Length: 151
Image (cartoon, rainbow, N blue to C red; front, top):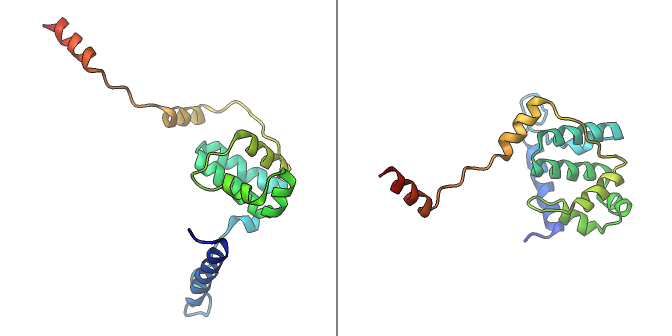
């Protein structure tokens, strides 16, 4: 596993490589974009998180909360939420399953409140499709029983 310092160095080297590709007009061809740099106010954070919650994908929601924390500063967020900085990184990492209590602490530390409202029909339809479970296959006994009845 890469150490955080090594990871920072690799991110810096990737950025340097991206900026080293210069176009004919002298401008960089690739400019890295990080939404965290543009989330300044509570309204920006609320809109960003509301949009990610509307989709309903847990991995996307977790990534949005992580991005909002980076926008505010991870050390500050850890201090305001009462969590350790390392614990905060671990809780918001991809493929993690943080407790709801942890998410509430982080949202409160962001200065936001979670509010629920009725979903539109379109959102409900998408949620139902995302949550649909494939039908269970019949057991061998059930198949044999059906065959016996039809015979």
